[in-house]
Every structure is written in structure tokens, then in C-alpha cells.
Image 1: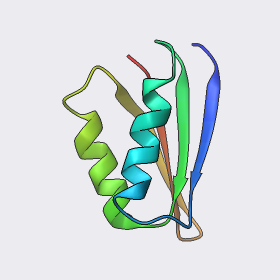
Image 2: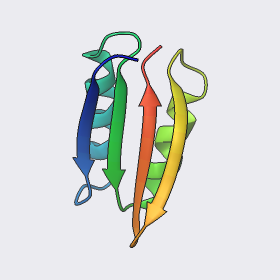
Image 3: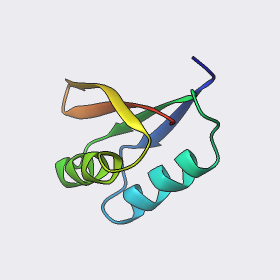
Image 4: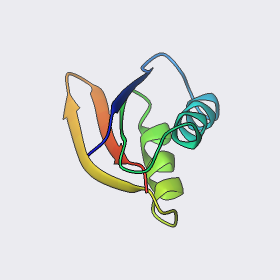
Length: 75
């Protein structure tokens, strides 16, 4: 596995959170891991929808203290 990039979207709402996530993934190399922290459940659902048809893969999701965390491996 490559480098881990952390992206804090806790105070952002859709669509800005989606755009920042996609932009971060576009700058990463294959095998890198993107750890996304967020609160908005709508952004959480939409990120997963965007990732599913791509070469990238959601490898883990967590929810703690009202925050979601997504771990996305760049394909």
C-alpha cells in the first residue's frame, strides 16, 4: 500500500465535500489510501456512489461520535 492522505471534510456540505474528495483522489497515485473524515450523511452516501463505478475502492468505513470516516484506496 502507498501513502496515506487525510482529508477533513467535517464542516463542509455537499457538493463542496464531493469536489474536494474527487480532487484529492485525482492527485493520488495507485495504491495510495485516502482517509476522509466528514459529518454530512448526504456527502458520505454520495462519495460512496461516486467511488463504486470507478477504479478506486472503499476499503473501510467507520462512524464515531457523529463523524464518518471513509478509507478509499486509489485504483
